[in-house]
Amino acid sequence: MTASDFSGIYREIAEVIGVEATLLLHQHFKGQQITLPQKLFTRDYIVRQVENTQERSNLKMIASEFGYTERRLRQILKECGSGALKIT
Image 1: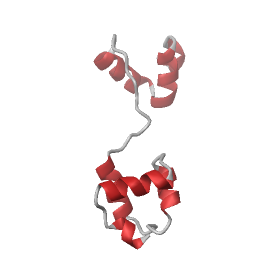
Image 2 (image 1 turned 90 degrees about the horizontal axis):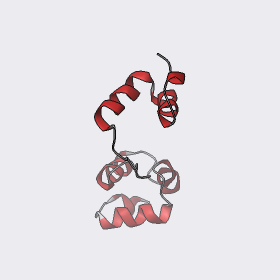
Image 3 (image 1 turned 180 degrees about the vertical axis):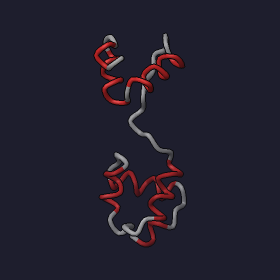
């Protein structure tokens, strides 16, 4: 079985994640509509990553990695009470 054996969107999915993962996805979610939010990580995870990185001085780069603007990342850090802002 190859990705080309699947119909429609399943073919595209199989090309990206593989045949076995596509079968597993279908088994668990068939018949359901799935919407995937653009933001993959929780705020807490992002804050931890900022606090643990050596590149804290480059918030623009870190923000870009997570799909945020530098301004939004600063807002998240402030809302979470992160000490990482004091260093930048």
